[in-house]
Image: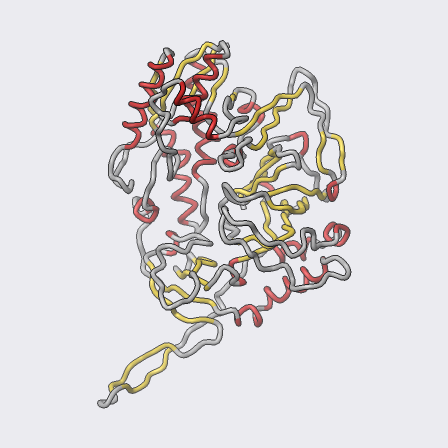
Length: 479
């Protein structure tokens, strides 16, 4: 079998190529250039040139053919232009997910096939297993086991699982791949730890053995995001509004969400409503007051209207500011200031709401606070950023999100949920986030994900990905 390895110049793809060659495959390497413009990178240089050099040296060391392909046109049209469009709408896309779906396992795959490849291999940390039929366990209503739909043996179902190394699992980035794409993919290092990959590379004396992992946007590199986005999105100065916790005590939507959450709790539940996330970072555990605070029957019976209410992001348009004049100093100079508002304060200025994302705390330049300041919402139409102080600010947490019907993608199409069906899955809403327990409810207007514990920084445009209990990735969708 002939296998094309996407050789990136990193240690992971290098070891993937080495393992495949040792296993007897007919291996050749191909490096793809997806980006030309170095103006937006923090280092101001073309990182791809160094990567190509290392990749070519690795191929030479392994004694396998090396080829180069320029896919920058496809990358700009199908990944970068999508990014600009999403940011202009106030959404936060994930370019790495799009790069895998549109480039690595589509445009790159097509080129590899023309060159005679039967399969394409990459250095992703995930596991792929084919099955003879589509039969397999699936979480039924509220976690009960049910049987999948059987498929002919001629059409195996491919199962993609988390990587063995919890610190390097990259299955999230492959959440939009189809069965057709998985059927032509190989992930040789998915069952290994990063330390093992490094050790193999050093023993084989690969040029990439000590190379640091790449960071930043896929194939673009580490960038200053506002500078990168300003290639197409124009800066526009606007207000930064800090929202006080008192706003939530008076907001009708938030209060209605509290009522719905209270109605779904187990009988006898004690303690505060689970509407505030205690999450701090990917590397710190989240304290859990009650692992399963909700009553399964009550959740399954939740009305469409209540689910829509729970999944609706809060609006801060009701916070208005008025000016007043006053006299200052010995000469009683007439000045203007903002009137005090119990719900918030004008906290600063920004250069464009489209350059910020929910949960962001860097680049705000707002001082005078004990705790960190986070973006809790953006209003693109009015060019306003709303922020809140502290990890436990009410505006930073949400319990429920919705994925529109047209945005749903089932990696396992044989396990697609029917309208009216309810299942338990584990979900993550960003790369490296520990998997979160949640109930998924399929309704006419989309898929609702109700988490057992509130999530910080649920961001429109990002991908929600759901997994079975054994670590198999089942589906994904744009929030």
